[in-house]
Amino acid sequence: MLVLMMCIALAAIPIAGCSQQTLASPEGKLPVVTTNIILADFVKTIGGNLVEVVPIIPPGVDPHSFHPSAKTSIDISNAKLVISNGYGLETSLNPIIDNVIAAETIYIVTTKGLETKPTQAQLANELGNIMATDEMHHNEDDPHFWMNPLHTIHYVQRIRDGLIRADPVNHIWYNLNAEAYIQKLQDLDKEIVAILAVVPAEQRHLITFHDAFSHFAQRYGWRTSSYVTHNATNVTPKNLAKISLIVQSKGIKAVFSGTHFNTDILEHTAKDLGINIGTIYSDVLEEDVPTYL
Image (cartoon, rainbow, N blue to C red; front, side, top):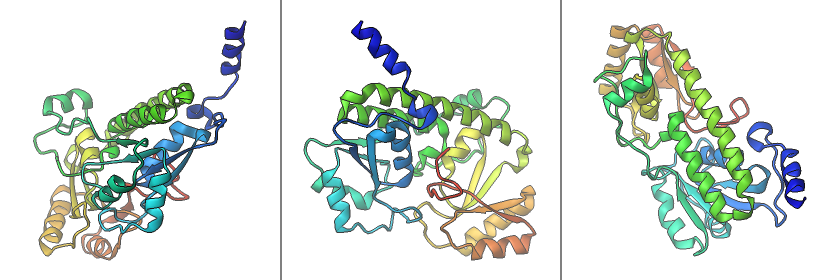
């Protein structure tokens, strides 16, 4: 009878991945610290009302130039779970995390275990009718793995496991929410494939201000070029000339800027070449784009 009553109670409770509601923890919310806002969004989706998430690096701030404050150390030391991206994205935070994290705190690096070099055969098999050639862009130094929704599934699984280790009592909710979110990510991947399939093969070249989209391009059979590298170094005349040549020779219709980058150079390029400027997101969440999905 007790088991039956528990099953009925569980069936009556909405799953956070579907309704964005979960049970509140009887002992209060689990304190979680993430290094950036994207990871915080994943944690909120999987943890729902069971977690209290604090992202260290504010939205729109370059992680390579971010300077931690005293509050950063306090937040990390108070957390029961700390989550970072890894792969060189938060180098400035590593010494602080190592020095102040409590011995009992769970620390998860989300990119750990990701396969970073898919073969051309794997890509061709995944992409189907989307072009996969030796010309595709591969950047082994790009830490923005979440730009490929299938890599994001790996992030979700790592975060789910970290939440369960830090709060095993609520494992059922973390598992259910993660499963629901993974389904949404798989649906998102299919949607992107369908949308991009209409772009002519010769124009499948994504030009952005910031080099954060190699994993996106790798997944969907595109090439990428950028005005600056992922650590936001200065634009060079050589890069300007190269991108102008690509735009003219391939008939590309637009270049893309992030919301927190200076667009003067892009505007100059667009005016000279008669093309449009679009907005593309890699890590900034705001009112118009409140979640990763």
